[in-house]
Length: 164
Image (cartoon, rainbow, N blue to C red; front, side, top):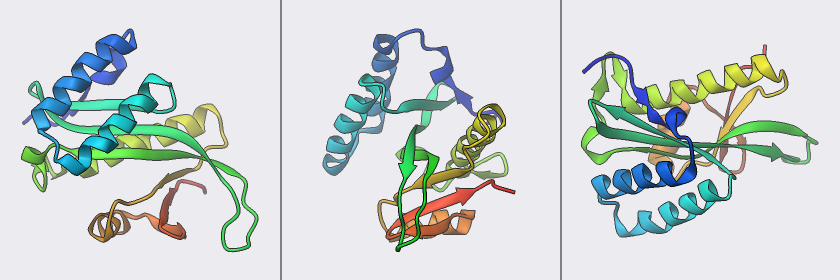
């Protein structure tokens, strides 16, 4: 494996081209029945421009998917908050690549690294986006994010802050 995870999403000129590769990605991964409704919703969000989806490949094999959007975070436990955060709507690692290392770390870490780099880039451009937030799918996934460095925000939500 080379050490650069290819993110093909930046090369798409239009939704139709992206949609074809997205459909191939979904077919390759033979999603479980319970995942199909999430994939349908994600595709609708992409078509409506509500999330930006990145497909990651290694040697032309789909290894992962990440969708990001902006989310306004309101009050939490009686504390008034008004922040705009970058939100991980969906992070998926292809079944054949789960728990496998990519160079020196897991593919899921590389995809999160990409999300955090995107957060830094937005912060340097806009200046007010300091947090990456997400809602973990289950406790195992929650523990993965906590081990990565995320912290509890409110309820089940987690955040990763780059604020200084």
